[in-house]
Image 1 (cartoon, rainbow over the protein chains, first blue to last red):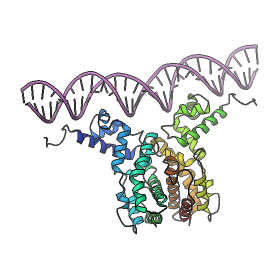
Image 2: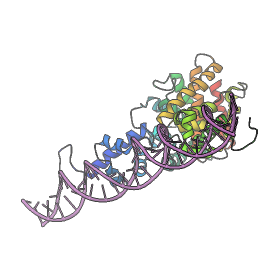
Image 3: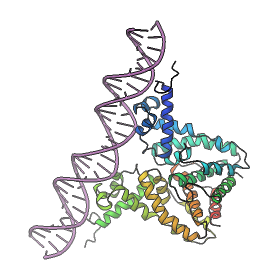
Image 4: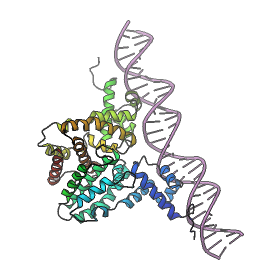
Length: 185
Length: 185
DNA sequence: CCGTAAAATAAACGCGGGTTTACATAACGT
DNA sequence: ACGTTATGTAAACCCGCGTTTATTTTACGG
């Protein structure tokens, strides 16, 4: 048993370090621009370990995205303030933190990442969302929600368009809240 | 003067052929996945001609996107049926045709293409749109519009999410029209 | 202690990318 | 008609990528 910190040899710890680094990198760079050497150097390990612990770059991406996708931040509250809550979440989320939405948008570009993203999005977000919405048009509502959220984030983070990038004005936040709330009602 | 069709040597014609092929390819594949050899083979010419006629892949992308971006399809009509008109445009546009929206979304992934896309979007779409909107919050309205349109198209074409991909239901089209119209009013 | 297996590394491999270079061929002025 | 220039091609170059292989280093049970 080793209780010291630092450069101990621990497979689990190393795999986690790679996963965390991958999540950070994949949140800012596209699948093809995010080099395995970038990720592993951020984690402080050798590129070959990706093969060992995750099998391939694609599998690593899947693990990274899957670990980040969490529907509870969306539906973990009442339906009344749904729009307000999500609008606050989306406008306050910084660029620097790990975020599933940029990862999703960035994934749309690469064929491999796109397949993985669509599958995970369906299973981890859409399906619970449909369950939560209920009703005949639940699928449509869920799709509208992710579409608006993704579009908003695209121009807030990836293509920083001035009124949306940086600090979001109260007016735009209100518009976002209203638009999202309309999807629920 | 050569009036025959086919394999005549005409620099302008060749450059146009490359540009058209580039627009098609860049509408379906990301900047990094769209190989110059794919584009030039579709145009029926040699890859080296990209260097000659456009300077670089990045310049070719810029020319291709610039040629396709057209704000008139957005503002070329009355304000009353703005939402309806755009909703019909966005839901009827097929995957196969050249389309600026997929190009934009796909461009967000690559660093080089992103810079070009943001600059062109600003100059060719946002600014005329702001002019057309008028008023104090014109920038905000323009940004909201492109955000919603882009989000919608992301899940309609690139990440084909079922209720949005393929044939769009009347309910969703109505929702889109209403959402877009609310941005104008 | 020591030997064995796990963990991590270093270096190379194969491949495809954009781009450049050298060469071939068609068009056009004189 | 011919030589010059524009146009197009073929092949190579250089680079970075994901991945594999061979080797070194650490941990742990006997």
